[in-house]
Length: 492
Image (cartoon, rainbow, N blue to C red; front, side):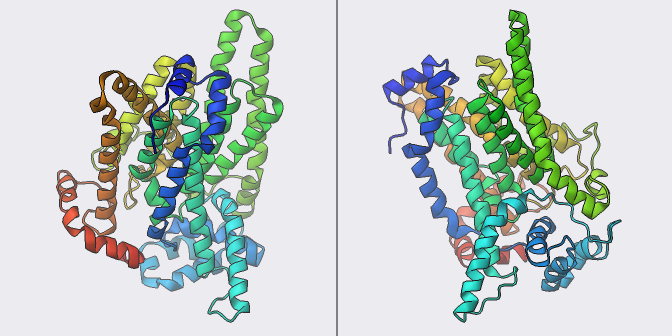
């Protein structure tokens, strides 16, 4: 597959000022889902599916799953039986971790067990869970050792494959967004690299029970729709964008900050319109973004009703809000602490941020609107007491920024490829080399994490760097264990 730009496509990209405005850019976005790079990304993704783990173990995963089972089988939001089921699988583990004390022994003001997770992940899992139930019923009917109780393998396989599907869909949406800005080669390598060179692959395949795959999809869908409609935001489109924004907030509430992307873009547009004296245009922009916000709030109402039932008030559990400090005391450490910071886990993000800066320089309104989502995510992560996400793989709370990272990296790659077209093959080779190094670095850290070659609570230097060079010698046995007994890694 030739992932270089042909002459006509390069001309179109340059003609759009490298930004992809106008009808040519929209056509590029629409056709992005049909080009060869998409087929290659899908093919590579399917090849990785045998590496998936089809189980849930962590408290967060159990909370999301509990919504599904309790509503589908019990028709209520009393999670005691769901929590007890998972506790009984490993009583010692869940007692030691505090799961029993937090979720079984604690009662909310309304007499129910707490659930700190929003409902959005369960909502997106619902179609897959329903398919799992049909499979379980079919297995029972033909005498297989399957029970249609909502807990067994058909259900777990269904929701984990659902997460894998949403992660893939989110990556393809990010790719399509890139294709309105850059050529095919840059968009392909950026999407591939952010997928395999950051924690995205871990939370879509090895820990799919978390909300991050669903979050990636929802944010990517929201940004894709916004980018497609941003300069022609009719009321109907604004409502659709607002619904997508409400879903984003129902999956991870802090992701609601991405609603500032269209707000900032519209705000900058209003200022420009007022300077030109175009009052009607300014009013249209204000009405459009207000409609987005209103539709998002209406879409989010089921989450508020859920909180009312669980907590007696239409807001998250107090134990969640108490973790927040509005002044973001850990703001700088989120990006600079060697043991936990995003660039140390995923150095390729630095290249993506350079690309985002290039985009801002070329088109300030578009670039600033996109980067605000990352900046606010950075800020909110610094406001959380558990900002380190110690015990988890990578800076997982930045997975919602995946579409922005893909765009930034694609723009950086496009600049490199443009130089390569003038200076020869050596420059053109920089992009795949950088991507391969990023992917190798991330794969090495995943192996260190799951095999306990590293401390899961933090990165240690230079230990983690030196351990990367040991991995090739142990790779055959590690791959064999990954393919035959992935669950064993989580029991260590």
